[in-house]
Length: 258
Image 1: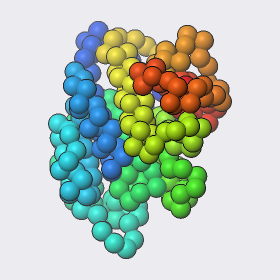
Image 2 (image 1 turned 180 degrees about the horizontal axis):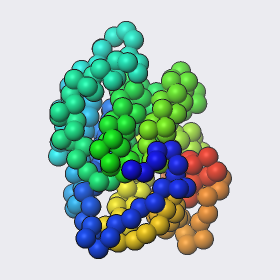
Image 3 (image 1 turned 180 degrees about the vertical axis):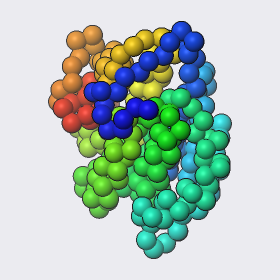
Image 4 (image 1 turned 60 degrees about the vertical axis):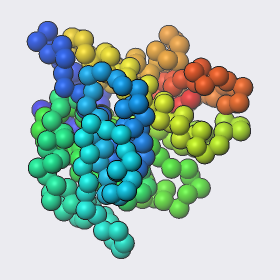
C-alpha cells in the first residue's frame, strides 16, 4: 500500500491490464458537493461522482451518481470524535461509495462537514488500497474559520497520498469578480484539474504522482510552467471565461489562477 503523506515518493503503476482504473470523485460538505455537481453537469465519462453531506436539504440538491447522508450534530461540538462516529454509523454505505482504485476527495476547509469528515473519508479510502488525491478548498484569511481550516487541512494531508490546496485568497486580486462568479471559477478550475489528471491516469505509465499532477496542471499554464509563486494576469472582467485556466503550484502546493 502507498504510504500517505509522501507525495514525492508516491508511485503510480498502471500496467496494460489496468487501462481503465475505477476512478471516483468524492465531494464532502457543501463546497465539495458543489464541485461534484459541476462535474456531473459536464457528463464526464469514466468517473463515478459521489456526494457526501450532513445537510439533507443541500444533499438533495446535489447532482451525483451516489449520495450519502451523514448524521452530524447540528449544534454544539463537531470535531474528530463526532466525525468518526458519524462515518462509522454509515460505514456500509461509505464503503460501497468508495469502491475505487483512484479517489479524488474534494472538500472545503473551515466548515463542519468538510473539515471533520474529509480526513475520515480519506483514511477509510486509503485503508481499502485506493490512491487518495485530496483537494482542499481554503477560506479567505479574513474569515473566522481560518484556524479550523488549517487544522482540518493538516489532518487531511496526513491521511491522503497527496493533497492539493486551492486558496480562495487568490481570488481577491481578480477585480470585479462577484462571490458566485468566484465560486464558479473555483469549481471549473478544480474540475479541469481532475479531468486532466484523470485523462493521464487512464493510460499505462510508471511515474510519481507528484510529477503527473504537476504536468497536468502545467499543461494549462503553458509548456514551461514550473511550481512557483503564481502571478495573476488580467482582471477577471478582461478575460473571457474559457481563457481562465489553472497554472502550476507555488512552493506551498497552492494552486493559482491566470
